[in-house]
Length: 366
Length: 126
Image (cartoon, rainbow over all chains, first blue to last red):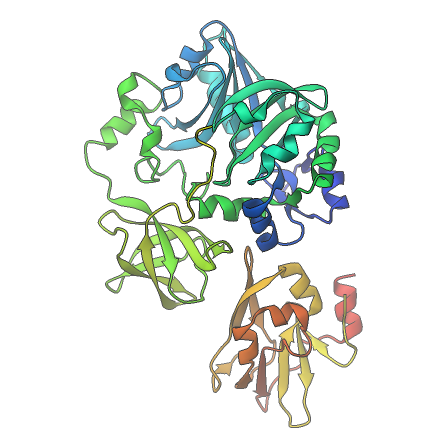
């Protein structure tokens, strides 16, 4: 028999139900997949402001003398260059040089980082970090009390500012501060996972419902995981379990920019360097369908009458009014080339296009 | 959930209506369109295509979901609703009328035992 562990829920479940959210199981949590509809929520983020409950993401405080160096020996990015008050993207690699997860690190003070990881990988990542961090570096998982809200869209700053004691206008992409929101200590960072300007709030679970309600009252739209996935796809951002996998190297997944092999030793480096002795055979590319049929994850890619690749994520793009996808294809296929996606045994033409599909509107300078 | 009493239903959330000319009109239920959300793509078979009772005859897709279509009765496709493929939103707006999908002529030996009446279908999603 199968024993299913009960689903966990965030501090915002009642808020989601009140707003008409459709709740689905995701990464062991009960999460809202949509409210008004994926298209409407996508447009709300692109044109105004949308709220995402991302409290299911793993949040780990890593503290201790030399925390930066200790983390830098694990991640494939160079976090020794990330000063206090800045956030950084990084990959955790497997010992075989595959991708264990992609994470964000928030450098809160000299010897304190907050590491935020995918909800579906939180347990794996925690075990990985605990095994590799030296004993004097303390890792504590915030899961008992964690909440995280992404406030995304061109009006994110004006909606969040009245609730926050810090001057959000001073922040640019990947700045992070410890501030007070609704009088409660929290972490605020400028960024997100939508390709749009926005902020992420990480704070106590007890504060989350009130913050959520005040932002809704101010005009933000509640948005679910469906719109979040569409927005990240439009922005050409990879997702763990789809583009990022243990059996793919960062080069194959299109995230080689996040590997700083020249920085020195880090976990998985040796295996990755070994792989890099021969050039990668496959690459992650963007596709745009020529007709109305929708490419979905797992559909095969044909070129010259042969199956040569596979779709890793695919969806209609409300912003482009076109059907887009990310796919693993032979590395020689590049933007401008034509391929076919096999949809229910019928080949449908598509073009390979440059990424991102939709230009990012993040606030990279003040 | 709107479940008209004069229709037959499948466990996979299609409805069928017996027309006076002996054909069956097939669509998806109000429950199905609501579960899918905003429908953005409809793919239907060609007229003349023969369908087995268990065959998938097309899809209705929302941004995030693919709904496969089955009609539970074997027969030949005699008409498709081009309005639904041209404007998939009508399947949400009018699942039992303007948003119908195909008409089939059931085989002489077609088996209708896989269909439910409205009460049984409503109980399925109660």
